[in-house]
Amino acid sequence: MPLLHLLLVAMIQGLTEFLPVSSSGHLILLPNLTGLKDQGQVIDVAVHVGTLAAVVLYFWPDVRLALRGIPSLLRGHVDSPSAGLALCLVIATIPVIVMGLFLAATGLDDKMRSTVVIGWTMLIFGLVLYWADRTGKGTMPAEFWSVRNAFIMGLWQALALIPGTSRSGITITAGRYLGYTRHGAAKLAMLMSIPAILASGLYKGAEVIATADAQAACDSAIAAGFAFVSALLALALMMRLLRSVSFTPYVIYRVLLGLILLWIAYVMPTGSLPNS
Image 1: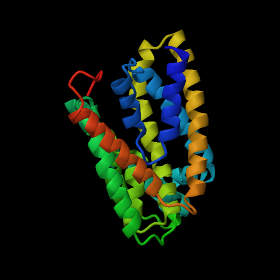
Image 2 (image 1 turned 30 degrees about the horizontal axis):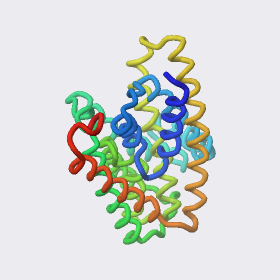
Image 3 (image 1 turned 60 degrees about the horizontal axis):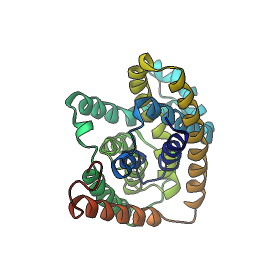
Image 4 (image 1 turned 180 degrees about the vertical axis):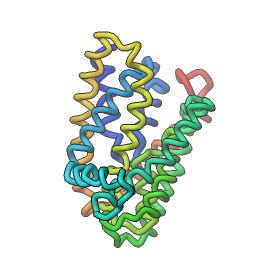
């Protein structure tokens, strides 16, 4: 895989994974709009590993807290903040795993990888984010996460399997709707991404390990490294800005991109794009 293409994929994944603009949508659009070859599952797994490492590093104190709670949780005891956080993360991840298996089994995941779908989801869920950000009470910190709210946010997260929805965007939307502060909603969305990305990586990784070769391993290492750096920078910037800036800039970007994609899909002559 050409180095420039590899770096482009890694940076798109890293920069958009934790911003509410849909990394999967942007990665699908790359070959759809440019004619470049699809990067394939090996690189997909690699860039997800890079972004997973970035979020774990950035939120390491919270990740360590959840890890400490796993032994108690396995014994059936939820008697500490650490066990409570671990339980909430498990509950929040179940819906996306169930939905992911359903889409994979029915083949709907491949059928939704189109410019039209991404255009509509960019537009619609961008407006929903704006609505939730403006109407949510926004007083609860992330520390007030409950099992009930974790399950509700998990149901919303399952919608992110529709390309263009944005996993971080839809979970932040749910968090704002439930009354969390902007920073708190984003923090919970990022923590929820860890088991979600891990589950996706393990599922896809099991499919590609047997076909990987030395060149693929080298490409994967490069992609993972650049995805890690770009994801860490994007994550740090967003979390800092959220203390003083709303989600409106991301909403504007989503709406504009959605309208452009719908114009391309419905107005431009058929055949003018590699895949619409």
